[in-house]
Length: 101
Image (cartoon, rainbow, N blue to C red; front, side):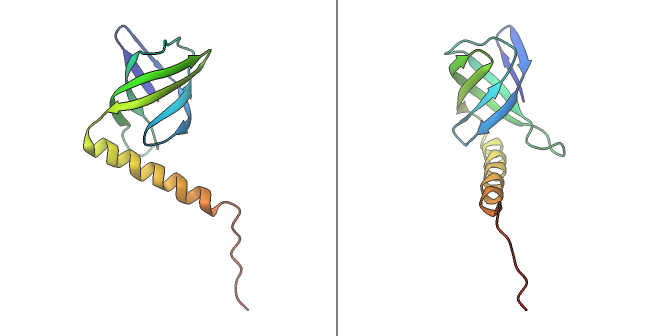
């Protein structure tokens, strides 16, 4: 993922994502209350999902949590498809299908 705010920009690695926001790790110091524009690279095959405005809700060391505030409807729908895919995948983890004999 990438982010920009006023005079700084950086990259990070998201480790938790939902429709309301995400948390990520970054080496760039950010402060609570900062407003970011973000690009979430959900797969290598498609362009990043753009979040026009996200507010930093916490910043502890390299760990940052943001709440998504504003984005275009089509970008929201793209993220929704990705999150649904994660949810479906997590439901199928550990499920074993047996062939009927």
